[in-house]
Amino acid sequence: MTFQPAVQPLQPASENAWCFAFVEGQLLLPLQPEGEVPALRPVMPAPLLPEAQSRHYLGRCEALDCWALRLPAVPSGWRAMPLRAAMMAFPPTLMALAGRAAQVLEWDRAHRFCGVCGTPTELVAHERARRCPACGHTAYPRLSPSMMALVWREGELLLARGPHFAKGMYSALAGFVEPGESIEDCVHREVAEEVGVQVTDLRYYGSQSWPFPHSLMIAYTARWVAGDIVPQEGEIEHAAWFPIDALPGVPPRFSISGHLIRDTVEALSAGSLR
Image (tube, rainbow, N blue to C red; front, top):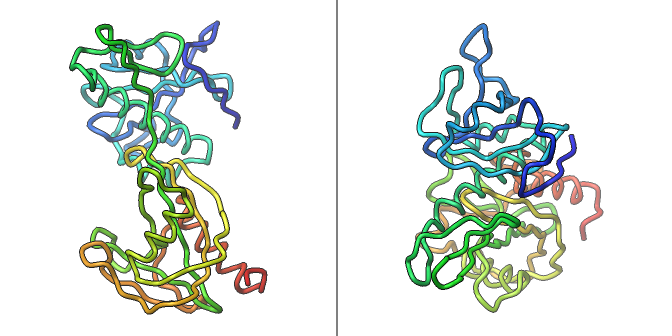
């Protein structure tokens, strides 16, 4: 599946459309005609679009227009599902589109009024922006960069869990970048703050847009060099070294943390990470 981003609808409009519609933060999926099982292709007839309280064009995927919509209620024939659960079932392109739609709608909701003078803002036609007609302040969709660091030493991974994690679930360390900080500076600071250890040999792994609500996760591996684990009070419920052949529950592969952990285990097992 290929996606072509755009701000304004392309011509001619497609007869049907990918509609990533949300009601109270949950994604709508169409019901199958024969029952209550949601389909995983959120395509609806384009004439339904005017029912949206807010709508934004995203581009085209598989020759179909793509829209982000906010609706006042769940329409007949549709079912609301938590975004995370829906994204886990989507193929990568639709997963990314659902996340894009959620972030665009959150930006639109949060910038209805100018943050400088309080005047109602207006959508800009030629770009993804809301502009204040009084003072000219322009608000673009903003991302919050966040580092993720998987700390390792020979045969082991340092995994931690926060108070909000599902029971038995552990993951890599993560934290938001502060003003004036590089991603690498953030890795060293957050690892030291959260678990009290020092690391070296940072290796970039990859990144993932994370629409909860608007983060960009930037993942690294980092080799432990010194220090004993001291969990940060209030942030880390438990942290420990786990043998790579005896890991606790970890996130699924739909998230970058799930990929990072599993791929690092494979690299350590093969001896390619030293």
